[in-house]
Length: 410
Image (cartoon, rainbow, N blue to C red; front, side, top):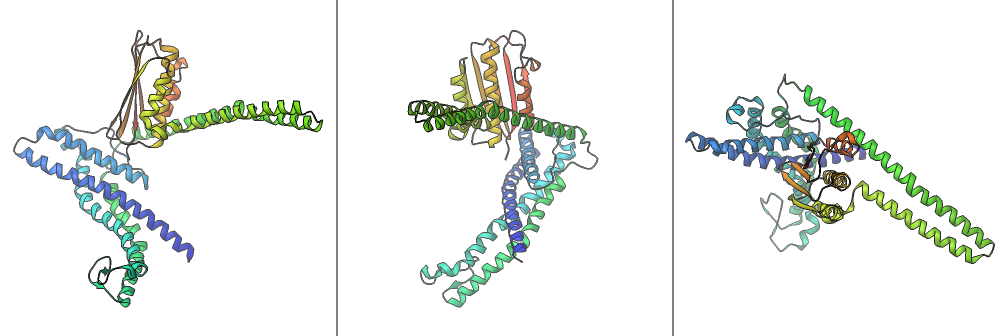
């Protein structure tokens, strides 16, 4: 019985979280639907056509956000390979029409279900705990969560408490079904239409998954090698020195023991320093402390080539995305300092909707080659593991421009 209750509670809490996230996309869908209606009305009088591409872009962005949400809570929902912003092509495109149909359904239904899902736990908690704080209320001010009558007697308090129990039962019993109902329009309308050729997208995702596994294995080997060749050797030295100091103390040779203990302390500090370096290479704490802009400014300050940093990224991206962007810039600036012969470099970051754009440019002699052992292959694998892309433009004679796109949508 207890196990079943815990399982039901866990499922209910997960469903409430899904409903809350669905409420956020429903609010976005409602806003975009309003813009679609206004633009369509303006198009009837001939002044809305210039707005159509931007509104279509917002439709695709809202649908893409819902696909990402649904993919987090179940089977992945694949989107189209490209977004159509041309009005005539959009009207002929079945995916765009299906996205508009999803807007019409999800905007009202998703908002209603999400609002109920958010309010239910609050109402259950308020009414179930009402007897605890009712004595502290001023006279004739207490009421149930739905506020239909004033509670001024203890039998009325009991009724409110029973309502809280009822809300809890509804919460445990209905929210999983409500979450599935809220997700149904997206899974029906935003999934690829029947007969769509997904071979290319499947191949792309398969390659991305393979790159993610390769990058993970490479990172584990790097960490293992760093620990084995550096920290482990230092700790072995500390152990040997402490053994020597112990034997010296047994022989009453305090001078030798003090000297060896000092050497052991130095070796332990070196081991700790190397261990900190390995930890920082996994996820640099400077990103958490100073943000991505501050972390990249630190990289630029330590680069051997004068580097300008220009960051326009409102808010924060996922930690893994920020770490990937940091390592990309670190690897690129290392290549600039070692191989390019450049006199200046520039790092630019922009966030465009759900993509983080990273651009590193230098005025060196160019000719960057992924097969030349400059770390570009590892960089590409790390980026593609996040379903991102890398573009390198490095003609002989320069300049070299490295562009990276990373998904960073919520």
